[in-house]
Image 1 (cartoon, rainbow, N blue to C red):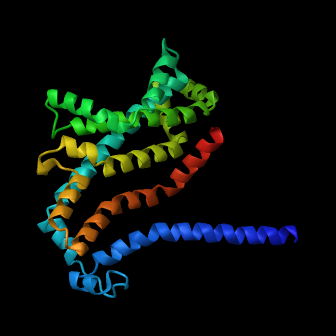
Image 2 (image 1 turned 180 degrees about the horizontal axis):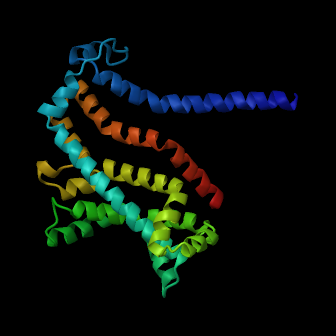
Image 3 (image 1 turned 135 degrees about the vertical axis):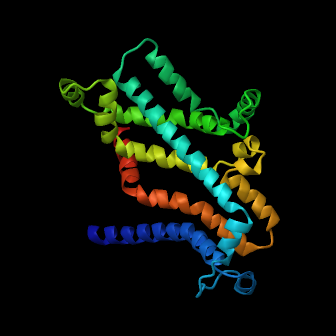
Length: 278
Protein backbone atom coordinates (compact mmCIF):
# COMPACT_ATOMS: atom_id res chain seq x y z
CA UNK A 1 0.00 0.00 0.00
CA UNK A 2 1.45 3.35 -1.04
CA UNK A 3 2.05 6.25 1.29
CA UNK A 4 -0.62 8.38 -0.40
CA UNK A 5 -3.22 5.63 0.04
CA UNK A 6 -2.39 5.23 3.74
CA UNK A 7 -2.57 8.98 4.22
CA UNK A 8 -5.95 9.11 2.49
CA UNK A 9 -7.40 6.29 4.63
CA UNK A 10 -6.10 7.86 7.85
CA UNK A 11 -7.55 11.19 6.79
CA UNK A 12 -10.97 9.61 6.18
CA UNK A 13 -11.01 7.92 9.59
CA UNK A 14 -9.83 11.09 11.31
CA UNK A 15 -12.41 13.33 9.67
CA UNK A 16 -15.16 10.77 10.29
CA UNK A 17 -14.28 10.65 13.98
CA UNK A 18 -14.11 14.45 14.29
CA UNK A 19 -17.41 14.82 12.44
CA UNK A 20 -19.12 12.32 14.73
CA UNK A 21 -17.82 14.15 17.81
CA UNK A 22 -18.98 17.50 16.41
CA UNK A 23 -22.45 16.12 15.64
CA UNK A 24 -22.75 14.55 19.09
CA UNK A 25 -21.97 17.94 20.62
CA UNK A 26 -24.18 20.10 18.42
CA UNK A 27 -27.24 17.81 18.22
CA UNK A 28 -28.44 18.47 21.83
CA UNK A 29 -28.16 22.22 21.23
CA UNK A 30 -30.09 22.06 17.95
CA UNK A 31 -32.74 19.86 19.61
CA UNK A 32 -33.06 22.37 22.44
CA UNK A 33 -33.52 25.30 20.05
CA UNK A 34 -35.99 23.32 17.95
CA UNK A 35 -38.11 22.43 20.98
CA UNK A 36 -38.10 26.04 22.18
CA UNK A 37 -39.98 27.08 19.01
CA UNK A 38 -42.69 24.43 19.45
CA UNK A 39 -45.88 24.41 21.44
CA UNK A 40 -46.31 21.93 24.27
CA UNK A 41 -48.84 19.99 22.16
CA UNK A 42 -46.35 19.64 19.31
CA UNK A 43 -43.67 18.45 21.70
CA UNK A 44 -45.99 15.84 23.21
CA UNK A 45 -46.58 14.54 19.66
CA UNK A 46 -43.04 14.32 18.22
CA UNK A 47 -40.80 14.94 21.30
CA UNK A 48 -38.91 17.59 19.36
CA UNK A 49 -37.51 15.16 16.77
CA UNK A 50 -39.26 16.84 13.86
CA UNK A 51 -38.00 20.20 12.64
CA UNK A 52 -40.41 22.97 13.50
CA UNK A 53 -41.81 24.51 10.30
CA UNK A 54 -43.20 27.53 12.09
CA UNK A 55 -41.46 29.76 14.60
CA UNK A 56 -43.46 30.12 17.80
CA UNK A 57 -42.21 32.93 20.04
CA UNK A 58 -44.79 32.40 22.77
CA UNK A 59 -42.41 30.32 24.89
CA UNK A 60 -39.82 33.11 24.87
CA UNK A 61 -42.43 35.73 25.75
CA UNK A 62 -43.70 33.62 28.63
CA UNK A 63 -40.19 32.99 29.94
CA UNK A 64 -38.99 36.59 29.70
CA UNK A 65 -42.13 38.40 30.87
CA UNK A 66 -44.25 36.10 32.99
CA UNK A 67 -41.29 34.16 34.36
CA UNK A 68 -39.37 37.39 35.15
CA UNK A 69 -36.42 35.88 33.27
CA UNK A 70 -35.37 39.28 31.93
CA UNK A 71 -34.33 40.30 35.46
CA UNK A 72 -32.14 37.22 35.93
CA UNK A 73 -30.64 37.76 32.49
CA UNK A 74 -29.74 41.39 33.13
CA UNK A 75 -28.29 40.50 36.52
CA UNK A 76 -25.99 37.92 34.95
CA UNK A 77 -24.96 40.34 32.20
CA UNK A 78 -24.07 42.93 34.84
CA UNK A 79 -22.16 40.49 37.08
CA UNK A 80 -20.29 38.95 34.16
CA UNK A 81 -19.34 42.28 32.57
CA UNK A 82 -18.08 43.89 35.79
CA UNK A 83 -16.20 40.77 36.87
CA UNK A 84 -14.49 40.22 33.52
CA UNK A 85 -13.47 43.87 33.25
CA UNK A 86 -12.02 43.76 36.77
CA UNK A 87 -10.15 40.52 36.06
CA UNK A 88 -8.70 41.84 32.79
CA UNK A 89 -7.46 45.09 34.36
CA UNK A 90 -6.07 43.59 37.58
CA UNK A 91 -4.54 40.46 36.02
CA UNK A 92 -2.93 42.35 33.11
CA UNK A 93 -1.38 44.90 35.50
CA UNK A 94 -0.15 42.15 37.83
CA UNK A 95 1.16 40.01 34.95
CA UNK A 96 3.01 42.98 33.45
CA UNK A 97 4.51 43.75 36.84
CA UNK A 98 5.64 40.15 37.38
CA UNK A 99 7.13 40.07 33.89
CA UNK A 100 8.85 43.45 33.67
CA UNK A 101 9.39 44.84 37.17
CA UNK A 102 11.87 43.79 39.83
CA UNK A 103 10.73 43.99 43.46
CA UNK A 104 11.44 42.01 46.63
CA UNK A 105 9.59 38.71 46.91
CA UNK A 106 8.41 38.70 43.30
CA UNK A 107 8.95 34.98 42.79
CA UNK A 108 7.33 34.00 46.07
CA UNK A 109 4.25 36.12 45.40
CA UNK A 110 3.94 34.68 41.90
CA UNK A 111 4.31 31.13 43.24
CA UNK A 112 1.54 31.92 45.71
CA UNK A 113 -0.77 32.70 42.81
CA UNK A 114 0.23 29.43 41.16
CA UNK A 115 -0.45 27.53 44.38
CA UNK A 116 -3.92 29.08 44.54
CA UNK A 117 -4.72 27.39 41.21
CA UNK A 118 -4.33 23.98 42.89
CA UNK A 119 -7.13 24.64 45.39
CA UNK A 120 -10.52 23.41 44.11
CA UNK A 121 -12.99 26.27 43.85
CA UNK A 122 -15.76 24.57 45.91
CA UNK A 123 -13.29 24.21 48.80
CA UNK A 124 -13.29 27.98 49.24
CA UNK A 125 -17.03 28.56 49.03
CA UNK A 126 -17.76 28.16 52.76
CA UNK A 127 -14.98 30.45 54.11
CA UNK A 128 -15.74 33.05 51.43
CA UNK A 129 -19.44 32.94 52.34
CA UNK A 130 -18.65 33.36 56.04
CA UNK A 131 -16.36 36.31 55.28
CA UNK A 132 -18.89 38.03 53.01
CA UNK A 133 -21.65 37.43 55.54
CA UNK A 134 -19.63 39.14 58.31
CA UNK A 135 -18.87 42.03 55.97
CA UNK A 136 -22.56 42.38 55.12
CA UNK A 137 -21.97 41.80 51.40
CA UNK A 138 -24.50 39.01 50.81
CA UNK A 139 -26.88 39.94 47.96
CA UNK A 140 -24.55 42.83 47.15
CA UNK A 141 -21.12 43.26 45.57
CA UNK A 142 -19.59 40.32 47.40
CA UNK A 143 -20.34 37.97 44.52
CA UNK A 144 -18.39 40.16 42.07
CA UNK A 145 -15.41 40.43 44.44
CA UNK A 146 -15.34 36.68 45.05
CA UNK A 147 -15.62 35.72 41.37
CA UNK A 148 -12.94 38.28 40.48
CA UNK A 149 -10.60 36.73 43.02
CA UNK A 150 -11.28 33.22 41.70
CA UNK A 151 -10.32 34.18 38.16
CA UNK A 152 -7.12 36.06 38.88
CA UNK A 153 -4.60 33.23 39.35
CA UNK A 154 -5.05 31.57 35.95
CA UNK A 155 -5.38 34.91 34.18
CA UNK A 156 -2.16 36.28 35.68
CA UNK A 157 -0.25 33.13 34.81
CA UNK A 158 -1.50 33.13 31.22
CA UNK A 159 -0.84 36.82 30.61
CA UNK A 160 2.60 36.72 32.23
CA UNK A 161 3.59 33.97 29.81
CA UNK A 162 2.73 36.25 26.90
CA UNK A 163 4.34 39.34 28.41
CA UNK A 164 7.58 37.38 28.87
CA UNK A 165 7.76 36.84 25.10
CA UNK A 166 7.51 40.51 24.17
CA UNK A 167 10.81 42.08 23.03
CA UNK A 168 12.09 44.76 25.39
CA UNK A 169 13.12 46.90 22.42
CA UNK A 170 9.50 47.96 22.03
CA UNK A 171 9.43 49.22 25.60
CA UNK A 172 12.71 51.07 25.12
CA UNK A 173 11.29 52.78 22.05
CA UNK A 174 8.17 53.76 24.01
CA UNK A 175 10.33 55.21 26.80
CA UNK A 176 12.22 57.30 24.26
CA UNK A 177 8.86 58.66 23.10
CA UNK A 178 8.13 59.70 26.67
CA UNK A 179 5.85 56.90 27.88
CA UNK A 180 5.86 55.86 31.52
CA UNK A 181 5.31 52.28 32.72
CA UNK A 182 1.52 52.62 32.82
CA UNK A 183 1.42 54.04 29.30
CA UNK A 184 3.69 51.25 28.05
CA UNK A 185 1.33 48.69 29.60
CA UNK A 186 -1.68 50.30 27.93
CA UNK A 187 -0.28 51.30 24.53
CA UNK A 188 2.31 48.56 23.94
CA UNK A 189 1.67 45.58 26.18
CA UNK A 190 -2.09 45.08 25.95
CA UNK A 191 -2.40 45.34 22.13
CA UNK A 192 0.37 42.75 21.67
CA UNK A 193 -1.19 40.23 24.08
CA UNK A 194 -4.72 40.60 22.70
CA UNK A 195 -4.95 36.84 21.85
CA UNK A 196 -4.25 36.02 25.50
CA UNK A 197 -6.79 38.64 26.59
CA UNK A 198 -9.40 36.93 24.41
CA UNK A 199 -8.74 33.63 26.18
CA UNK A 200 -8.97 35.33 29.58
CA UNK A 201 -12.23 37.07 28.64
CA UNK A 202 -13.93 33.95 27.30
CA UNK A 203 -12.79 31.64 30.10
CA UNK A 204 -13.82 34.01 32.87
CA UNK A 205 -17.06 35.05 31.19
CA UNK A 206 -17.99 31.39 30.87
CA UNK A 207 -17.10 30.76 34.52
CA UNK A 208 -19.09 33.68 35.90
CA UNK A 209 -22.05 33.17 33.57
CA UNK A 210 -22.41 29.46 34.42
CA UNK A 211 -21.61 29.65 38.15
CA UNK A 212 -24.43 28.09 40.14
CA UNK A 213 -23.32 26.63 43.49
CA UNK A 214 -21.62 29.75 44.83
CA UNK A 215 -24.33 32.02 43.41
CA UNK A 216 -27.00 29.92 45.12
CA UNK A 217 -25.17 30.43 48.44
CA UNK A 218 -24.68 34.17 48.03
CA UNK A 219 -28.06 35.29 46.66
CA UNK A 220 -31.27 34.90 48.62
CA UNK A 221 -33.22 37.80 47.11
CA UNK A 222 -34.90 37.19 43.75
CA UNK A 223 -34.14 40.75 42.64
CA UNK A 224 -30.39 40.07 42.61
CA UNK A 225 -30.26 36.43 41.50
CA UNK A 226 -28.19 35.60 38.39
CA UNK A 227 -29.43 33.56 35.49
CA UNK A 228 -28.37 30.07 36.59
CA UNK A 229 -30.07 30.30 39.99
CA UNK A 230 -33.17 31.79 38.43
CA UNK A 231 -33.14 29.03 35.82
CA UNK A 232 -33.23 26.38 38.55
CA UNK A 233 -36.18 28.01 40.26
CA UNK A 234 -37.97 28.45 36.94
CA UNK A 235 -37.44 24.80 35.96
CA UNK A 236 -38.81 23.67 39.33
CA UNK A 237 -42.01 25.63 38.71
CA UNK A 238 -42.33 24.56 35.06
CA UNK A 239 -41.13 20.97 35.39
CA UNK A 240 -43.73 19.66 32.92
CA UNK A 241 -43.52 22.59 30.47
CA UNK A 242 -40.65 21.35 28.33
CA UNK A 243 -40.90 24.04 25.66
CA UNK A 244 -40.63 26.80 28.27
CA UNK A 245 -37.59 25.16 29.88
CA UNK A 246 -35.88 24.78 26.50
CA UNK A 247 -36.58 28.42 25.70
CA UNK A 248 -35.02 29.44 29.02
CA UNK A 249 -31.97 27.27 28.35
CA UNK A 250 -31.58 28.78 24.88
CA UNK A 251 -31.63 32.28 26.35
CA UNK A 252 -29.00 31.23 28.90
CA UNK A 253 -26.71 29.72 26.24
CA UNK A 254 -27.03 32.42 23.58
CA UNK A 255 -24.76 35.19 25.04
CA UNK A 256 -21.76 32.89 25.58
CA UNK A 257 -22.10 31.42 22.09
CA UNK A 258 -22.30 34.94 20.64
CA UNK A 259 -19.21 36.00 22.62
CA UNK A 260 -17.21 33.01 21.40
CA UNK A 261 -18.19 33.56 17.76
CA UNK A 262 -17.24 37.23 18.09
CA UNK A 263 -13.79 36.43 19.52
CA UNK A 264 -13.16 33.07 17.86
CA UNK A 265 -10.07 34.10 15.88
CA UNK A 266 -8.37 35.72 18.86
CA UNK A 267 -9.30 32.79 21.09
CA UNK A 268 -7.78 30.18 18.77
CA UNK A 269 -4.72 32.37 18.20
CA UNK A 270 -4.25 32.71 21.95
CA UNK A 271 -4.51 28.98 22.59
CA UNK A 272 -2.08 28.06 19.80
CA UNK A 273 0.38 30.78 20.77
CA UNK A 274 0.27 29.60 24.36
CA UNK A 275 0.94 26.04 23.25
CA UNK A 276 3.97 27.15 21.23
CA UNK A 277 5.28 29.20 24.15
CA UNK A 278 4.84 26.28 26.56
